[in-house]
Length: 290
Ligand SMILES: [Zn+2]
Ligand SMILES: [Zn+2]
Image (cartoon, rainbow, N blue to C red):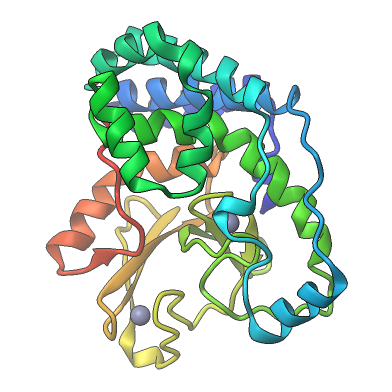
């Protein structure tokens, strides 16, 4: 599954074109996100991070207690690379016909003073974020969007480094990310039918048994449901009748195009609507894309 994420900017563009050909209704949205994800894959090559160090004692405790390796605030990032990427993403958004165009224009003019906000964002310091958003004159959700997407390549690099602490002997049957503790944002099925979850924050992937709700731990097969349509065999919604939450799944075994999971997540927004209509809530907040 991880290899689906490690692709070149050109391959991201190809994946975006393939989705647009298959789902023309998503043209504008996929073109927008395709450019952002391609810029992130490009930036990933330039990121330099100090490795995060975890002592053996702490590792032992975290493994035993099934705790993630670090809190989100403990993840490393490259401030200079994040600042450059922020400028690029603002440029992409300014060009777009989305609601992010206006805040991107404002942020572009202020990008020089944005450095400390990356740390506030990772610290989940909501009051600092709200103050900053009000001071800059943008919606706090829009600010969070730009900060997160500027940090995302570093978060993936950091998660990769931290994953070295997860040994084969690490038994992890939790529905939250073993690296950063965030909930999964997407699930995938690969060749042998193995199910993987993608972290909604650092995009680390980890295997999880199929008959298990990642949000409440329900293992009762009669209370685990699927929503799907014959027209889109590559997607389905895994819903839980116990906690009424759902996660979307991409079945890579039947996907007849190059796949980049973050794009598939966008190209399946209609399933979020369907799940909501059926009375299920997303396991992670769905950020309005435009
Ligand atoms: Zn994570
Ligand atoms: Zn559940």
